[in-house]
Length: 311
Image 1 (spheres, one colour):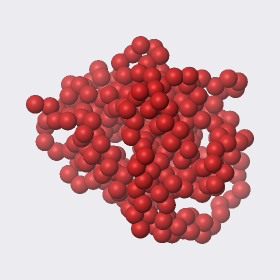
Image 2 (cartoon, one colour):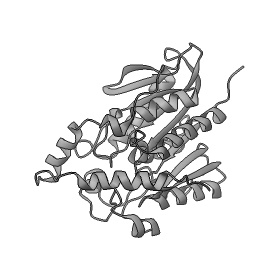
Image 3 (cartoon, helix red, strand yellow):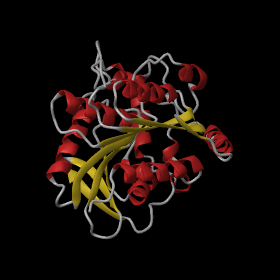
């Protein structure tokens, strides 16, 4: 594990958490009404940061789903990377993470396609997972028109990272083509975790306490399949090499650590980088968190190494 701990990380995170804590409470609503309001809220540009300059931005439709392409200038073919936002499987939107997705495209010299997959409670598991599987198929089928070079990665944040990991498991188990690399940022890989990081940090921006309304909306009743909770998969053999990012003050920190360890045990190359002093979802706030800007560059450098220039 590599730990990145710059002096700015902790104070910037403290300031952002204090800013959130000082926001006035809204009206008391039932969870679904509150969710609908939250889905309508646009990201704060000061927190979310700008789209990377000189990156081409183009709206796409994949099946019936909204997607957005981010491509660096010049017309050479590039690897395609499907990216999945976070939001606890019930919220989030590609517009929340455009600084990160465009920045990864620029820093990684790849074409990033950011997907608005279906959300619970309207569309519980496995709808979002199937959207990711189908979007990966769509990228392969449309690689030529997207100026792809045949190589494909998949990545995401939190719930999006869980969907990326689950799609890799699904493709492996169904004998389908696998992505060439997976990038899992502070992934949510289990449910009702009883880990050290849960006990230390639950409620620091995110709660993963048992009995959450959001979990009940997404996860099926009874025995959970490994594609819903990848941490419980019997084996991780044969999965794509992974870059996994963790946040040091995240209740999900140990999901990232545990999955990286299990991948390595099953002979899957896995690089774990932990951002000390910062919180879950830090990639959503590159306007004010230097940890996010550092991580965007690190993901880009990782993709350049994973996808060297074709001759």
